[in-house]
Length: 480
Image (tube, rainbow, N blue to C red; front, side, top):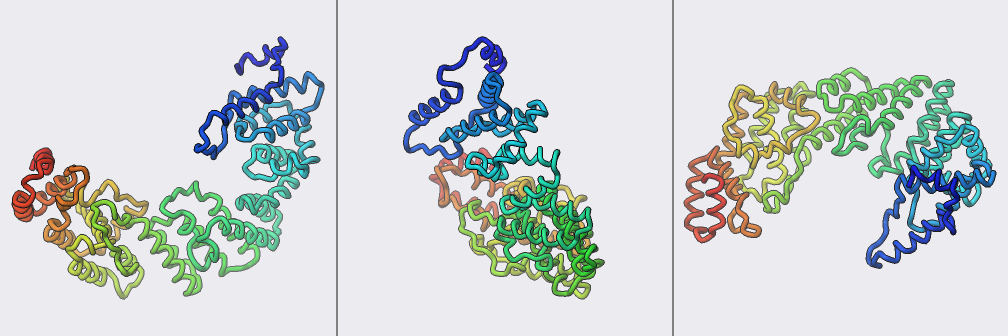
């Protein structure tokens, strides 16, 4: 249809009621055919081809009637407002406008500028994600940069990052005071978009820890990093040395958040107030610990595990503290971990988050015990679940763990597993649809590291669960 449309128009094959009218009638028919209990949430997208055909038909019609390009834009906008559920494809609309002759595009931009306050255009040009807004702003940036910036300023409450080009322009002209005012306007808009930033200042916590959550990709936070970069340059221009240092830490955290040595160097070499240093370091420490520690697996074994009471009771916290506090060091860390392991519950219902921390410690020790062959494949996959354990700071964390851990830590950890794993094996009474695959896998893992406990538990199962034929089929399938 798309390729034949120009020929159809030339031959006068015009729909009796017009292309748009036919679509509106089709929309009514589509809606009537959908059951009332089905709600149309995201509208009915027309797609690229239908959108192009509609635009092309209206363009050819307007040209045949000797009307200008803005009349075409007006007509398309009228059509859009006539739809209840249908919507033109945004990318196709923008692309179509950009392909028009430059003189026609200039006519459209002139008409939009003169009519942007009207009922028809106010909403379309005021919404930052509207295709008309996006096209209009790009054209303004080409022809009238100053007007473009003025228009951007109005949209900052909707799209906080629209303040960045304004700040950049003020920086170029050396207008540091006005640039700082615009930083605050931009920051306020950013804070309204993220509840975690409501009371944030550069002195209270690292911005990267608040905007990235469990996902981290530097490109995803380009705008936040840019804001900090501009802010630091403005502070330098205003001679605010203390703020410059704080913002430098903020900036470096985006670049090196998961490189422990770089972050230690950053905190050691950049001077800030003690209170600020403590707050920023703690926010970084808590963030990398959170990113590294696996989620508490409530549903994995079905035991309703409880959480630990202290948020700073984990071995990664202790490792970080032992590195930065000279009076602690490796001996303190080793003592803390040994005491922790010795006090760990063997009851799977009360171990809570310590189970996840132990999984991670076991896996990290396996990685730094490179010379030791891995002879427990099922234990690694079923209990440690090593395929789930991956964090951006793995290399840094393991490097320091290797330097600070005692030589027998691996033995201590495996002693715990050997002594207690039999209590973690799922009870055959806890089964879903007679599927005992998980039970057999845990038994195989137990056999790998504690064969005597495996034999004892197996004898108990034979006595108490001998009638569960599916259990013994799963055991046989697992080679047990």
